Length: 204
Length: 423
Image 1: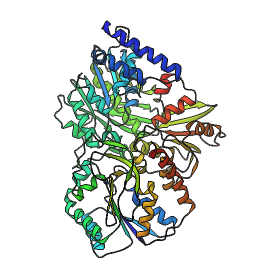
Image 2 (image 1 turned 90 degrees about the horizontal axis):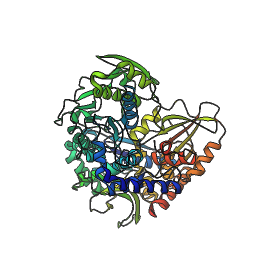
Image 3 (image 1 turned 180 degrees about the vertical axis):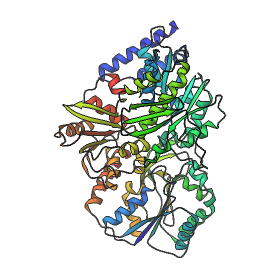
Image 4 (image 1 turned 135 degrees about the horizontal axis):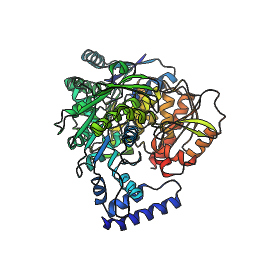
């Protein structure tokens, strides 16, 4: 059983980032691999997740999405715990995705400003063992790399269902989770839509 | 004001030329031209109404509320200048002036009642103080543009602070309650939905969460006290009124009570309950807000979705299981990421998925287990395929679309006039 943890799934979902958990679960399901999504929404759940990561638990994935300024402010009491969790995940090579304002827990100033770049991008990525491109919607004024990887933790400014639109990244994560990727009608169908999205947005 | 005629002439020529080239289109560019040639005309026009400027703004419900408010005020005998629902940004106001102004730059009317985009309302009210402002809500809306709901709330607070006589606020949105504490120049009045009615709405009003300690609900002047399908009752210390909403859904009930309270505040002692009730009963749906039209001799329901909140509320309010449904997400949805925040469990299937963002929509629906028929970004082909389908055995065809897909589809269906296309 693979377990996909989503940190504060309601609060850190302003642009649909929690969908990354759902997309991973669906793909595992299409491959016949049992999985579950568990929310991490309080201190005790954060402590338990941290314990699992520290103990080197395999077969887990963590989604930490982008939240509104209000959501981030309200989560301030958990700052230290989440910062520590990210460090542990990098060290333990636990796979996960950290999006937008969640980069604040990586020490980035992500305060909301209206003047920003707001468009679809195909980002070049320089991370060994990972795909060299990623497509998604960028709505940020930060001069960071659009997508970077530390350990097996993907840090990205690309909003929304990153894994749905980047099947190569999804396959890499599934591989890290120790599942042999297989195809299915549902997966083929999803990839057909993704191909059209890439055709549209990469040439936009 | 005579100096405005050359700019109006250029704008009108541009409008005619564009409409010759593109039937049913062409209000944006002429407005842009006029705004460059005669930027001051907008403030002169909006400042010229003897009974002032009334603004309706917020994330959702502006068009329906404005239409209801205008209907009530007109029914009381006043001449009202208003704007089409898609012309709620500065450029759109210039376009409306091209259509309505005399050559000397005057527009008839005793009062201007306008729906305004949140950011454009802030920009416009820097130059001209509104008499009255109604703020409906703050939702997670157009984040590619607004970035964060807190920034929208800040804009709306500025608009409210510039009102000279009245501010009407939604008592059931924590964001508008925060605005009420922003040092307004006038004491705000409140409208809302009774807790009894709200309890029956699974997902509430879809306002943006503030994640702050909950502010107590203020005393309301009017609230929706009963809602059963399209049958609504609003009440207050003044009594109660019963009427049918133009469409089902708590969001339309909120629009109605906002319009009612806004009219009551604007008209003051001249407000007549029976006249207002009659006007509310006679408001037809705003184009595509639950509008029922006849196409090829059969009923078709048009449902406009503009953000996660309106998508969720409209899907939750679908009647039964639509036998035939077209889902179109157009170019206006710049960042389709929000499609993944919606719960599609009430959408049992989609016959045709189309629009500029057809594949984005299809991907979200596919992952949400919604069975899909035809998926194509060719809107004309999709429209033809859908309307060539035999009449459903039960109910009617249903079209759920975003604003851009709506405009393009309406044109392809032969709704040529600017009013039909744009509203």
